[in-house]
Length: 134
Image (cartoon, rainbow, N blue to C red; front, side, top):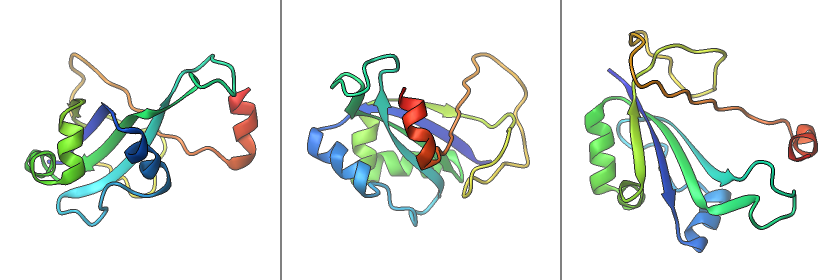
């Protein structure tokens, strides 16, 4: 059964910048179905404030074929070992609203339990960025 993972980690500045412009995760990695690399942001801060964009604070969301694939990645991959030093949660799929290209919706869904984590992944259209930042 596939699982998803959500990671929060603080990276060295140069590695974080590299992650913005290139993929730190090999998409052909055995067991990886989908991944998304994101930088953190402080909502409500002034638009051009250094506290608005937290380049070194990173969120990483991934879908894995199984839990063993995630374990192998965290132990054996260079970036996986970096992620392992941060915080992460393992997630079972419950339901969807919409779709993301590349994310494979599991056929088997988990029943509602405690605790529940909601992950929203959205792609912003370039013309919507100024309105979002405002």
